[in-house]
Amino acid sequence: MSEANDRHPMTGNRMSSDESGGMHGIEQHSYDVVVIGAGGAGLRAAIAAHDAGARTAIVCKSLLGKAHTVMAEGGIAAAMGNRWPEDNWEVHFRDTMRGGKMLNNWRMAQLHAQEAPERVMELEDWGALFDRTEDGLISQRDFGGHKYARLAHVGDRTGLEMIRTLQQRAVQLGIDVFMECTVTDLMKDDGKISGAFGYWRETGRFVMFEAPSVILATGGIGKSFKVTSNSWEYTGDGHALAMRAGASLINMEFVQFHPTGMVWPPSVKGLLVTESVRGDGGILKNSDGKRFMFDYIPDFFKAETADTEEEADRWYDDKKNNRRPPELLPRDEVARAINSEIKAGRGTPHGGIFLDIASRRSPEFIRKRLPSMYHQFKELADVDITAEPMEIGPTCHYVMGGVEVDADTQESAVTGLYAVGECSGGMHGSNRLGGNSLGDLLVFGKRAGEAATAYTSSLGDNRPRVDEADVTAAQQSALAPFEVEGGENPYTIQSDLQQSMNDLVGIIRTASELEQSLSEIEAFKVRAASMKVEGHRQYNPGWHLALDLRNMLIVSEAIAKAALARQESRGGHTRDDFPGPNAEWGTKNLVVNLTADGTGVDLTEKPLPVMPDELKKYFDAPPAATKEAGN
Figure 1 (cartoon, rainbow, N blue to C red):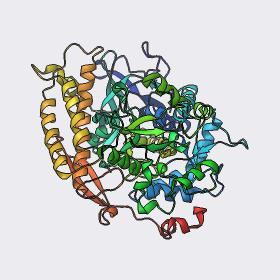
Figure 2: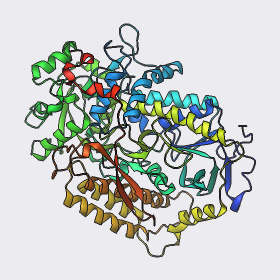
Figure 3: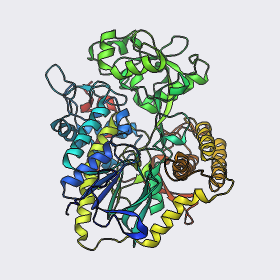
Figure 4: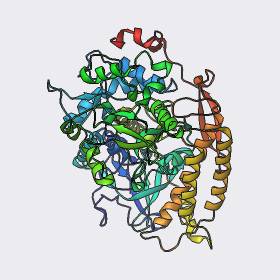
């Protein structure tokens, strides 16, 4: 696996020898492994592939490291036992499965719990600067749904430190990076991946990456919703690319609405307020000043959750009582409680509820532990969180659903296609616990990079080839919006889609609203078929959005259709017309595939993988009575 030598005059990336010529005059590159996405998952996968000997490239839609990994402010969930010696991977595994309401792929949850501590230590070896305990160990904080304080953190900027460390490592290793380059199609040869086709966002020039292994690390789908913590890049690109290539999606009905996003001013509505605020002592109050979360503790969590304010305060004060405050229930429970208070008319003046840490902690503590939150509210909302409460509300934050992959390798049903991070499915079941996202991308990023390299190596000289006819078709498809006469502006369609998803496929769902959403999505698809793009290919955000909308519509239909089919409430999926969990639905996943004509999605039911008996034992006894509970 040799390295290319020359440098691209515009990007500085190394070029393959055939770049200046090639099919149709398109810029070409040849690699062993191509990673699409440059957040934590993509960077870790690329590092692993490089270390395993692969000629590796990272292709990213935006800039290197500009990803939602940065938004994971709270920490990396790993059972290191630095705060609670009783913690171990078995407890973390059980917390993850219970948080996902037992719909998780058990093998992924097991691997994550077992390997996360080693991945954290690896980050520290590469230069990550974690906060320390009094004994000099990596500090670990409390987070919702976790039995013990196990989130390794750097203030409330953990994701930023992770990206800094991984980015520096990737650059140091000399991994090629193609920034501001969007992939629009995956190429196949006899059913196997042969490469990825895309374009430079600045010039509109097309580019072809030939590679037998492609790793999708494109993040989530949040821009399908009006109120979201996600930025413009998160249009479900990896989900849609995988489906068009022939892979399946799983768990798409489960969308996490983070309990705490900013609600004021309107320009920052949905911007994330880290769970660390609650982990470090913040409490939720309604407009009456009532700490309302005690009214919403599910029976499932009562054994481990403080049921009086006095008991909860004692936990905050000395941490000796291990029955945690109700503000640290799993995110789906907290988000539904907040939503209920707002709907009952007990919301704040701007339509949220209050998150108060000012009355609980000193200004010095807040500024030290939550520096990003302090500056975020001060600069964007003119609120001093050391002196007054924040106004917050649920915001579309994360999708548990993604590409269905093999637990050990992260390979999809398409040979040579892998998915990691938020665009892969199965690890989190119906609800992700805070802090598990960073551990997820580290553990499975490494595994995917190694597996992709091993597959490429096994091919020798018999690599799948890129068909020129497929490249021509990809070009024509990308340029189609320029050919439309008198069509509609893509921004109008996007805005209408976001409003529809927010109103009809949001935090609380009903059959009638989901059916209405599917009808509206069909209408959006008709409108999108005649989108009109003005101008040229250079610097054309309207064209970029027109291509993104194709992905957003596929993913939105997958979410709505799966949500309509699952007739129960579980995790990130709440049906007002089916308010409780259903035992029958707790034994199966919904799998989504593209229809044969590529115009819609089909659903099939699939039984959950069978958990081995040695793991089932962790769920046999009530949580408070198990050895690991430490009560």
